Structures are given as C-alpha cells and as structure tokens.
Length: 239
Image 1: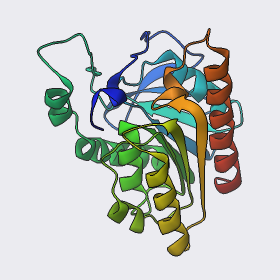
Image 2 (image 1 turned 180 degrees about the vertical axis):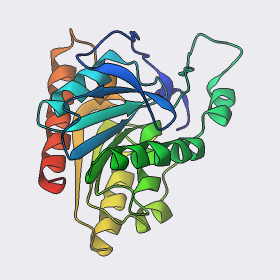
Image 3 (image 1 turned 135 degrees about the vertical axis):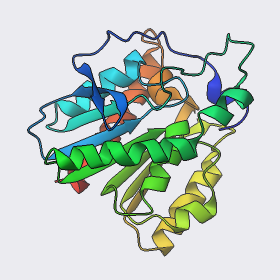
Image 4 (image 1 turned 120 degrees about the vertical axis):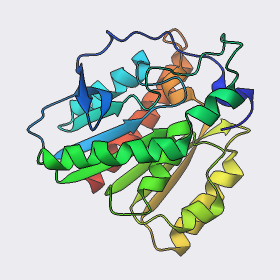
C-alpha cells in the first residue's frame, strides 16, 4: 500500500447500508450477513476505507446469499482513512492502522467464528486487506483465500509461505500491484504446488472491485465479474 493510487476515490460511507447487521465479534465491530447456522464463513478484509463501504457490504450480502456466513470486521477501529484529514496523511494513518495489527486483530475474530461452530473459513482481502489475508494463509487460520488488487506490501517471499488455495484478481492499470508482479505471485504458487488462479482485468485500475461508481457500466460489469470469480473460488474450496 503505497502512493496515491491505493487511496484515491474514497467511497461514500454509510454504517446503515447493507442487508446484514453490525455486531461485536472477537473484540471488534463487524458487519455480518447470512445465516449464523452456516458452518462455512467468509471473512472480507477491507481496504483503507474500512468496513462501512456500501459496495463492500453489498458484496458481503451477495456472498451470504450463496450460503455463507459473511463477516466484515472493522479493522480500522472506527477510523478509516480520510484523504481530507490533513492531520493524518496516509503515511501517518498507516503507521497506526498497519497490517500487522490487522493480522493480530483477525486471529480472535476467526477464533470467535470457530467457537460458534464454523468449521471452514475463507478470506478475501482488498488492497490493504490483502496483506492481512496473506498472513492468515501462512498458518491454519483459513482454508482458502482471494486477493483483490492487493497491497504493494506483499512480497515474493510472502507468497512462498502461502499454504491454502489462493486466487489473485488484479487490475491492468495498477502501479501498486502491476500485472507482471501478480503473474510472478502465481508462478510462485504453482512452484509451491498451491492450488491457484491469477486473472488480470483489462481496462480497470487499483481498487475497482469495491470503489466502482454505479453509473459506470464498464466498471460495474468488471467488478461483478471479479465478485463472481471470488465467489466461485470459495464455492470450490470452502465446503
């Protein structure tokens, strides 16, 4: 996560959006959607703009409709990145809300899910959240992962430690996570004999899957295609 590209086009936030509800889980507020009776959960880890993004909650509801219990935790602790806050530019904000802290926060949330009878967990990370998800794949916290326009903090060495099936959905126009790097990630996963899938979406930029504008038909179509790819991956590997 570096440079202005990762933090441009903030969504209009609304804590009341979505068909689900906000609850406390593992010490964090979380938007949850779907049946709590499900034995399979999908964990969505937001970008820097946080868990209130209407597009992210809409996606959570779509995944829940496929039979999963979906959890979107507030890893930003009520303080998503605000590009208009001159007192906390992204460099200052990211020191407080770093992905190491995100990983530490994720563990008790997953433990809470397991205590509720969840037997399998898949996780998808968007930009900032993708780094958190990669860390989760290095130990038996989750059973499948999807990275969507991942953070530039993810390294080739990180990918060598991935232990669960992983899909990587990248943007053609992305300085943070260029297509060549996404393909390198895929090559490492193949060499590690990790079930994997890499897809680069043409004509879209970093963040497109959750920051698209509803009036932009091409952006919406591309985002929905990525959402379906993500859902298909989880249906194939979380059952």
